[in-house]
Length: 407
Image (cartoon, rainbow, N blue to C red; front, side, top):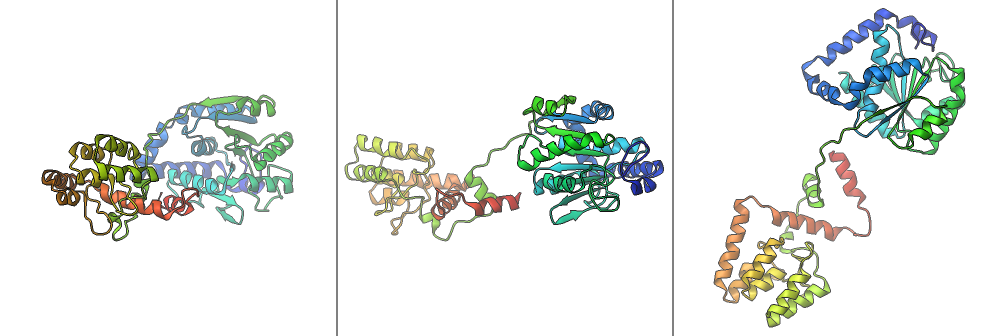
């Protein structure tokens, strides 16, 4: 809607006077001061864009189009719409701020985040409008939508301030500010939206437009809108934690099938199987050097021979080669893995061959792992189960969906 001198739909101006703006602002500050909001507000204050509030608002007041180039993590997507709304309320003016996003999921998630930062639920002062779904009321001050939704309404109505006419329910009815986010994502909707905006802006001089982009192609966008002023905001690199496939399987609660620990891992390569056989038959230093070389791949260190079910660690144990056992253990060989066919673990292979000291050593290695809470055997079994169940040449969409649901 419009307040005094703000342009836009008429009905909204009748209900949004300076007194209502003051009450809305007071209520917003009250919600933000609640105990449950303290951490959220602390994070907001720490965003790089927060320190540029006055500069951004001054540029918007003085220009119809402003380009904000902000690096990832600066807070532009969630904070700029709130800055604009609160600035209008502080001045006793109503506002209708439409914010576009390139994707439906972005429009919904950003609306939810902004609403949570304002201590409310989506549908009150913050809403969204996507294809076949809408949440919010005519008095919602911040409305998220997709580029496609806004483009369709502009094509149909030909105007920013009330496409479709008063009372039509258009998201642009009573529009005071338009924020176009992620304009560097050059899809067909975004490009056509910018083309139409440049055409309709001269006919809607009271509507303010904020174009927001990553730091890519800033000069291109600025020149397209006749050299509009640009403000650049540095980003903030959030801490990054690395997760590997076995970590993901653990997070998703995947468990090894019964008996999986007896299956040490994927089948041994032909080269590794040959090295195992020669080392077991001859037991020379040269053959064991070849065995260690062929089992250097982490995925092969627990691989099994397809006929004997042996691993490289079992072969070394059977030949009493403690130094080679130590090397294989350091690479991740699992002493708790049992070979197929009931031939037992590496310690059993050592014991049958009369290498009792080595067998005791391997028993101790299992005990050390248990005392330290090392679940490497279980992790290896889970990982091996997963690797056997999927085609490595295809993307596993199921685990991607499960991970997104978990997050």
